[in-house]
Image (cartoon, rainbow over all chains, first blue to last red; front, side):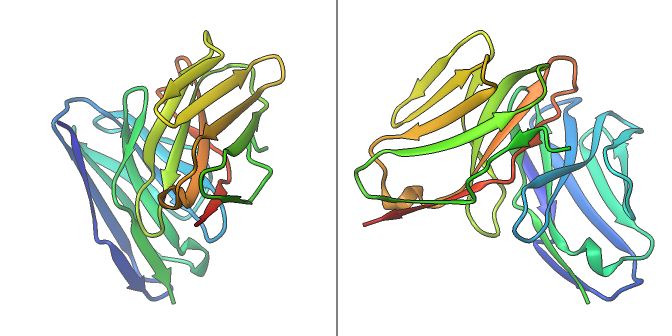
Amino acid sequence: SQTIHQWPATLVQPVGSPLSLECTVEGTSNPNLYWYRQAAGRGLQLLFYSVGIGQISSEVPQNLSASRPQDRQFILSSKKLLLSDSGFYLCAWANTEAFFGQGTRLTVV
Amino acid sequence: DQQVKQNSPSLSVQEGRISILNCDYTNSMFDYFLWYKKYPAEGPTFLISISSIKDKNEDGRFTVFLNKSAKHLSLHIVPSQPGDSAVYFCAASAMDSSYKLIFGSGTRLLVRP
């Protein structure tokens, strides 16, 4: 069966510091991978998606970037965090349904 | 531009009664619709889905209805249980969209014992 791992679960970072969130998927090959963000009191916003190694599509302009160095690895990064980057970040892989990781609660202080 | 809308941020129902969660969409290219349930500090979990070729799909206590002409779908939970208390997200995707799911803003359901 397929599993998705996302870490860390919580993160507190100062403004201006870099960010790296990692997501890996097991049990499937060439998955479509996604990064979503849930800001406080809001829905799930699609940030990036990837249909293959090195292929990244950005849905919204922002301070974040994504990379897919391996087939089942998806990384969300920032060079300098902003306060507005705080939120709950979710990695997902999808076939017809999307299956989510446990999420990372990021607080930028 | 919100393509998927859940206009009720919260809903409270008595245990044993029916819960009805609603969702509207604007993009006529959407052809696959899903409902997810989310507890605090956890990732959403898939509940039930429906293809645009159907108007109803049932799975145990959960039924999803799709009205394509109205661009509206709803999730019925019967009977509601306290463990159903969570945030429910409606999502939609379009064919050839790389399975991108566009989510609504969610509805918080509280089932009172």
